[in-house]
Image 1: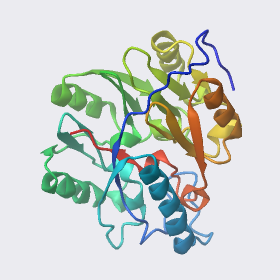
Image 2: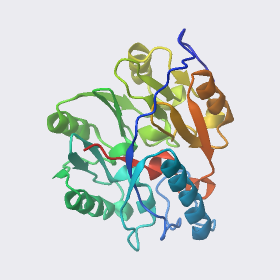
Image 3: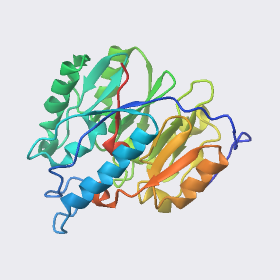
Image 4: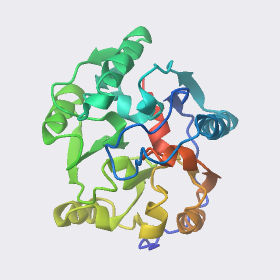
Length: 282
């Protein structure tokens, strides 16, 4: 774990109340393989997944977050990974268009929910998997590509939201979404803070990250391998995988308050804390 900033410790971290969308894993199982984490030949336990998800839900409630729920649908075991369902900003919801047909119906399901809850919905033309690949830092959207969301979706983001969009190319198939390889710790445009796994990005993307966000936390392979970077932060509190102990210490050193949760059952489907969490920005 590397800390490269002279401002490595701050005592003035401020939590900002978040509003999130979640989906209970009532139908969670691993019945197909669309990422390296999934092994349908190995059994999963839906009851364990539900208990672990509930722990995450209750932790968010204890931190004062507003939690909204979308009903899970039979036949969509990955719907629990709400982050992939779209990207919201300024009261607009840009819908998801999944690469794999197994997840295809999730896109319309989430768009229906957005429309029913007051968002102006923009249907996607390009393949994209929502906040799995789109992360907001200040007024800039960091946008991943390489495995799931294609670069055309980045152009759609620019047109829809009129924000700067920085394209980052992922090169490690185990970290196929941006939110598995990069975490936004503080989106404040005056003091942005991120963490990332250097080996997950191509050289041009690494240069861009180092230029735009000097002093970021660089997470090692061990913590990334338990999806430690698939975390959720309110600017002070950071919810992470329990087993990402090196990352946890780096967060403490920076003045953040880490909260570890065990989502090991959901990890079998390739998801962690952030995958289960879609931020709603109205």
